[in-house]
Image (cartoon, rainbow, N blue to C red; front, side):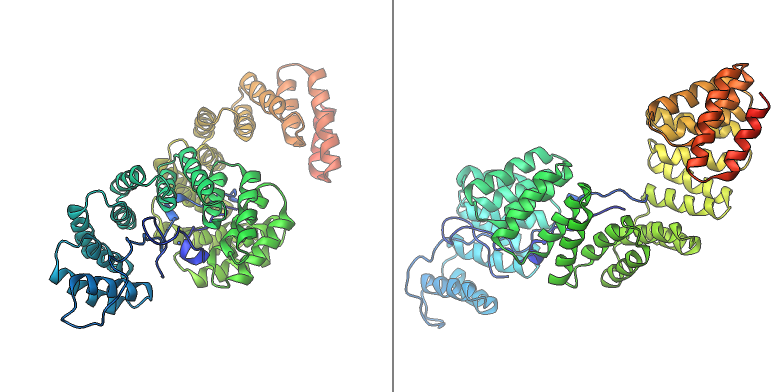
Length: 494
């Protein structure tokens, strides 16, 4: 089952930044389906803002209309640092009214608007700050963070690049730029930026967490575990770090360790929907579907928009024979994400299992329209066509599955069996042999049984007997009495 989680730094509870002043600082305020790391598109770096320059003087004055521009500015800084944004806005308004050339007053006011989610007004002020002071690295970083939140990654990256040229030690700019690289699939560059951030601030847990996520996207789970562990060492109250490490442990096959970390994530943040989602995958892998369903229900109660949880619950329900419930879950995924080829494929599987091959074929076709290289969907549609008697249509689908995935063992096996049905024994022999050779340790007795039938038709009685003997032995080992008896019957006819 797919393991995913959002990177929500605000929820991580991490402090990101350097000493306030000329640098940057955080203001007060981120089939059974195979495991998969968090998608970078889910990343949210809320709470990362630069601290503007120090006040121009060190003596703040009372909030009176007679204050000088510098006095009002300093008072605004003091109120800003105390978290009183309403009073800070009043002071910065007064400072700008008295002296419209104070670039940092616009910067601070832009930061407040950004904190309040008023990005349009924030950009107006930040653009004005940069118009007055084009080399203001803090303003460039602040504007980049606003662009990032608005989904304008290209403009954000331009600002972060410019900020780093002015201040190569701007840790948060490296973090943001790394996230943008992740979104564009450039995980190697993202890891490079996160590593630079770690070099600059070795005790910054956020940088380790973000690099851990990027390493997971590169399937480097051992290194990801090391980064998540370091983050936890630096700050033990990081639910998403425990969740990330649990995901990596899952990929490494360490299910007990994965369960322990995911339990810790849930204990530290009982509202963390993705921790329940991820823990359900461990339970399912451990053969505990009821516990998996409990976690998936909890995840969906916390976040009804969590499409992956519907997908996973549908998979578990289908495995338990609750095909109607599975179809409902996959349909819900498609409501949330109409372009999910996997949801169409999984829904088709449930329909086929329920005996509705025609509806299943329609869903597999939708999946292939969305993803023309979806080998498993071609294989599944071939199975559905075969069940309706369309053997040649099935053979065509199996062939397309193999074109998309040349090492697809099950597709060779299925096509070989289909060739056998239409009396093309030479083609069947080649496919079944390929399947057997590709899986030299295969314990599927049907492969040997079918090849034995093919060899018998080709007149190779000795080869057929060897295959039937192998099939009979495997059927017996697996307790499949019907298959064993059928194989003996075939041997008796040689």
